Image (cartoon, each protein chain N blue to C red):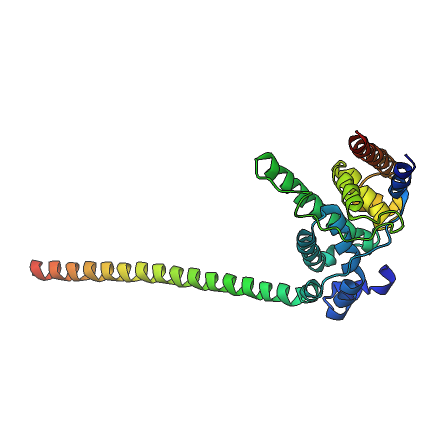
Length: 88
Length: 186
């Protein structure tokens, strides 16, 4: 019974023991700014690549449209010329 | 603790200030996580997450509370997240032993009383059986020696709520330890 009460005293005691932070963890914690910067750079690079790809695609589509339009106008022009020749 | 850290330099991204922060807070945060989660690997992972969050969001720290309280709050939230995740997993039938192979408490808590490994396990097991908020409040009060006011700020609760949580945690611990003795006496 005495032992039980003795054991119960632990509830109100302050714990003095502290675990040491493992060296590996300490190193990881110290390198967080470097990791975050690297991650940020990586994100920027991915964003820039995406932007570049989108721009290339937009350019390709626009260029394609322009070429089609040009071809269409040229064919129309040739058709008009042909027709005008045939009237003569 | 705060006086040792140059918060403005930290907010400007100064690495020296960050290193000082790690030197001052890594041990208390690691210990808090360890006593709440009672698993070394998980405590290491959470500590790492906490410092990533601290580094990324230090610019949002307005100084309304102490820096230490702010960091403890992040640590508590991360621990709570993990505890809830573990509970959810357990509910869905995946067994994670909280006290079994995963426990490796080596803390020589109140040394004069807890001589035996078994007693340590019983005590930590009892703490882990407390409701989440009581467990955290008790840990911060008895192990990290924070004041009621600091715990209230860190847990985002009122002072009276913290007093009640700590009181109830001690009552529950008594009950849990008494149960253990009753079982063993039979």
